[in-house]
Image (cartoon, rainbow, N blue to C red; front, side, top):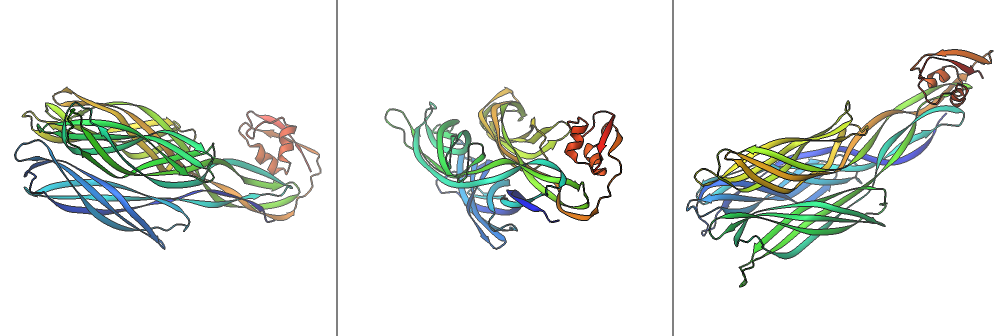
Length: 501
């Protein structure tokens, strides 16, 4: 007999696509810049310009902005120079034409060297990560009423909707550090989500935009400045509801800051122009029920099974504090510290039912050595975060972010730096489960009728009531009621009655 199908639209996560390409450039210093004595630090910020899909291929184009801090020959403090390098990469993208995909860029192996006192060569590797979300139709067979069925319910994820919207902010703020900046040498922009609110078909998301600046003064000294500004965006998410789980992301496209001349009252204004992409996805969790086994009281039947896969998700919202110590060699002071969390792996520890996130705090310091000369120090401090797993499967995708805020640092002695801060681990982890479902039931013959009205059966502890009822062609529900059984597995040895049909 063919079965009717109950079709469910569920989330289907295709394997991530990854690619790597290089971005390099030569930077020639303007005539007014002093010659290079030593390069202290090199950072590379990637920006996505376009991601165009043609058939089964995706062409990604973008740029990398290099910002290089260096020590000049004249000894007049730390200087900064920046330049952009363009890149292009094509990836295979074998997925449904209607699938949603997102492109994420990161850089690694960023290096720079001075070719001569006025020229710098910089290069890095651009890592391209493509995440694909698509829906699939899962056919859950519905058996006819004359069949006894053993069903199971699996938690499954459904993608409701997704959206992306640009946000551009132009404003200014007053420098209140007590010092006068002649230039901004280094800029780091991070985002900390503070609120989500679902309103009809819209998602209102609020966050703090955090500027961490390294400024240079006229006396050749440097000093850090932190400024925090609230931002918000409204995303159109058709089909969203109050029980949906939303994942949001803030992607920095560009940031430009300019220090104005000092005013007559001693104040100093910094103007900024920032462009951000704000994206959001909404998911819901449903119970997908399918038939694991079936039999008929009156007919001998044979079940055909097929494998079913479903995606599950768990929402992450964890926070805490860090207190770490890094060895930096002999130094007399810390001019700047940039601490960036780098996620390197997430897995499910089944024996302890825990989800574990592992990575390193990527620490980049600019310190002064025993002679008072600025120099760089790079260190990695491993970390491991845990949270209850609640029976979730091994993650197949990590759509979480780890943000470090309230950062402070201090020398504990001449060779060690103590780092303190607050972290927030948030987002969504996806796992996958598989199971067999009955897709077809074939009738073979009529069952022979038993001459006995009742059969006594001695059941042993741990035995399955379903298997006993199936073997004797007894209605499963009636078998449970007759023997006062509340679950499928027998909790003790027991004499059972089987009513024959």
